[in-house]
Image 1 (cartoon, rainbow, N blue to C red):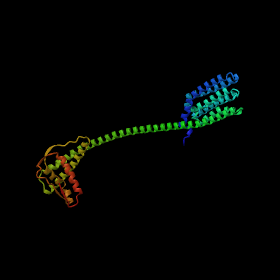
Image 2: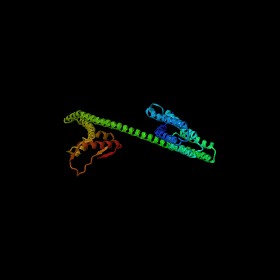
Image 3: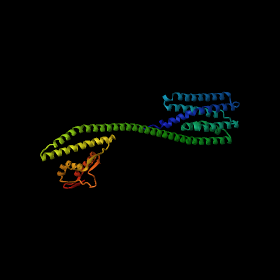
Image 4: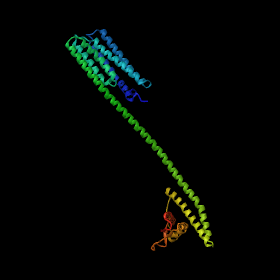
Length: 370
């Protein structure tokens, strides 16, 4: 459901604005009223003058009381109620000043009429910045001050009075236009403040969302690190547990191969021994991978015969080579020494990967040269 613009943040702020500035208006009313009493004291009936000032004083006190009550009870009451009370008080004050132009109008005293006209015109002009946030109330208040004065001039005889009536009408027209311009300016400023407030709130919400997302990412990162550590630990444990029975299998195969047996049986056992060695290599690869993840990987340096390692590859992959009718050649440069130093286990893993991939991607009857 769309929000009523009268209930917007800008409207609430404007209500606060007119009440915040009302104290200055109350003081100005009393001072101007007192000055008017002093100036007209000798030329007006004391009862009329005293009654008028008493009513003005009462209206001002009531308006001040309303402003004070708003400060104390604004949180528990709708702002529209305070706005209506403010408008009623403003209209009552305007009616008092409008009545002054009728009660104190004396066509035989042009000096007093000029003073009265200047005072009412000054009050009307000075009130525009204070009451322009509520445009309708501002227009009505200015009219209450100047329309009775203009009518009083118009109903009096003499060209000077007609001239003053015209000036009063012109002043009223200018002030009504000024009130509209001031109202639009104030409303634009209030809307800009609303937009800035909403933007700040939006940015604050985005900042909180980003902080929440960062916290979630930190938790996810910690969880991922814990899972990775658990995985590495699992791989290391499983690989270690698999090495023990595989060492026993390889040992038993080597023990059997040390005895005399028919050639066909020896070939079968050699193939089993090679497959067991290949499986042990895979287990070692898994173990090495876990060591790399934990930054615990290292290379060993030992002496070994390179040719023996290459011949072992031929025995290890012999069955797969025959299956695809592939020829395998291991060529060693004559300048390479017979015995070399290095990590034979890592080199063996490299050869297994190279030859295994070569067999996989070489067509039948092909040639593999290492």
